[in-house]
Length: 210
Ligand SMILES: C[S@@+](CC[C@H](N)C(=O)[O-])C[C@H]1O[C@@H](n2cnc3c(N)ncnc32)[C@H](O)[C@@H]1O
Image 1 (tube, rainbow, N blue to C red):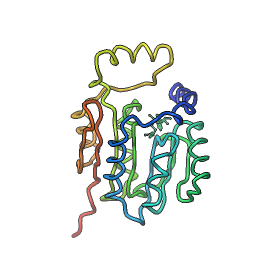
Image 2: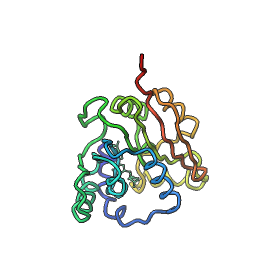
Image 3: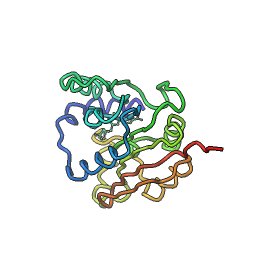
Image 4: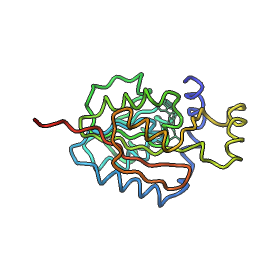
């Protein structure tokens, strides 16, 4: 975890300057997410990075708590929120298991480009499920590292050795879907912008009415 924090702290400024690789897919993911949002919703984002997506979503919900492991990422995110005069996004540093949120307090949780970076995904999905209100949604966008070209799959371990790549896990789409199902979610929407990534909206079972 310490290595991961250092990796992202070190890369924060470069990450902030990097351009979105596939703008059309990014816009489609924003639009799908906003189809679900309601103006009175409380949203949690983990692994928010430099906060760009939280700031775009902010006008569509009541509040967003945006969290990240990296303090450097959050410094940039906070500056962007101040510059944009966005008041309903707050930031907290930590991981889902280190932060203390009330159970069933969020209508939506966002985990964008982060699940493949987490070693114990099952524990994370279980935390997300516990934090969501009944009927709430978990929106995730995940790299399927096992589906990358052979060159990338060979390069990543070498890059990790010299500190140029973070920890990544290699689950495929079916494995991720079954992890979500095992955590208690049903899949509401699933879209693959390409072979090596998947965007999923997963739902927590709504409260049963007698
Ligand atoms: C690839 S960036 C994605 C940032 C942002 N969600 C986006 O889509 O641009 C991954 C982010 O996840 C954070 N991160 C990595 N592991 C994490 C963990 N276990 N808990 C919370 N954040 C984590 C990193 O610090 C980094 O900011």
